[in-house]
Image (cartoon, rainbow over the protein chains, first blue to last red):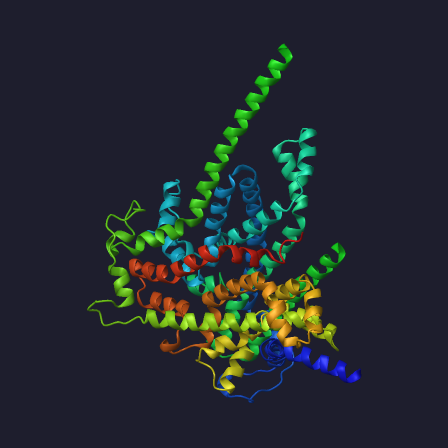
Length: 294
Length: 295
């Protein structure tokens, strides 16, 4: 009996072998190694093993590093703007599509809005750079709407970050619309019928039935949205390189430049740990809420 | 009699008012969707234009002439220009990386998902929690250690550095696990009584039941790998190894102002994805909603 149980264990471990290997080599292991590197002063150019343990010096240095503060603030700003704006827009559009469009058209609209999400970030960023350029279509459009002297979007200290946010919302909208639509489709229709009998109008139904009913989906999309906007990198690296100045630096972009431009692996790992801390907090909130619901 | 006539006209009024609203909203939504894809329309139209027409005012959404010169130049087909952008090579690299990564991640997810769903073993709970915790560790976080690891074992600057980490995809494992859990256990018991081993049961009996989920996971993983940007940027430096996003990035760096050429290059990277997406849409959308929408 015992023999048999052991054999059962062995078979199960064989099933888990490839992905356990993956977890230890590429996820858990690296996390622990990052934690270690973050308390050293290691620069990659000094060679492997040539490091001194400096404990929390990197983290203390981060507090007074204006580039880090800028990248943290920008990352939080991006999150605080793109997630709520994107989600409310997505919810309204999903509801409008659901209640006013023919089924086939609804599907076509959703697919069209989804397109930005499946394209590679280099291509979409490049197209937007062209659109934002001085004679580009976006700038022309804005001018034709009566803004005589529009800013140089990506080259302007005040407008580069909003321009990036605009692109991020554009790119993520289709995904949220799609998830909202799927969850609208699975909603019970009876509540609406009884609301109709009570004489509720469309806006009342939206505010008092649809929004509360969609709340679990909104929560899910908020979490995934926050996680992905905390990790923004591609748009920044291609469209603005963090500039002008530090106006569009984000956490991952700062990790990338510190590690792979200046080879400050210790310092970059410390920033990565801050990022991890942020993700940890978000995940804990998510677990907490999910458990309360269950 | 009079009363019922009145309600009838009121109903008619409401009816036409509803239809008007419906038509109006449909038009507005179509316009909005068009605005969403306008950047792509511009991209495609610019890719056929000459350098001079690209930024012409007012914008020509449909180019006067469709010339393929931009594409020819990007792909180095009968041009006199000596610069070779090696786009086809980048295509080949991207295909290799995406196909192999997808196969690896789906295979290992199916194995591990099955173990978590149907097998009883010591430490199952602890291992599962360790797995769950990995959802918090995105690839951006492990970039530096992975770079060190691959440089130590001499795999930096190879496509393997992009493929190997894909032997684990935690989110894929969870989705597949969910599918195995909801597949009937009776079949497994029956096969067991017939004397089939665990691997045979997994491969021949249980896995065919979760094929739709595997397809969904595969499309999501394929697109993620095809569009991956940060990892190749860090791990690959030789032009021979470049994947498509990197080749495009490089191209943009060298042809800064030639938007017609750049847009042709963008089209070449994006259009295959559009096609894959339109064909695999059903699976793909399923992959997205599994786990996102409860009930």
